[in-house]
Image (cartoon, rainbow, N blue to C red; front, side, top):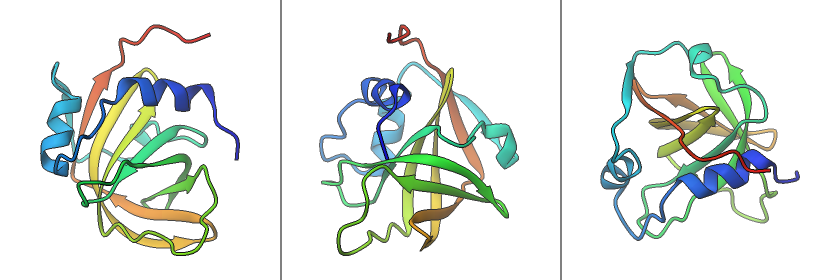
Length: 139
């Protein structure tokens, strides 16, 4: 899977995690404030096929896994890693996901369900933070 312009933009928006726990990293990303979307419908999040996402596991040294959204499967967010899994597939259980749903950056916690057919399946949390990206368009 090749990288996209959206992947580059997402990488530029997110600060380095620097060993922070997930519950401290999420507010760092949304320092300038985010709108909260309580109980959003999956389709309202803009996680259409091809959107860039980064998944962080709870280990503080996890630098994130770059993925592309594959859409929704019965209410579960489906994310395909940009690099094929070589060996053991990470099991996230609880994960923090940032999704670049242009022009917004979404951040939310998810419960991971499974890894099927080369993609991670997880349910989004009950609350999603949304921040309008102010990054200039990359050409």
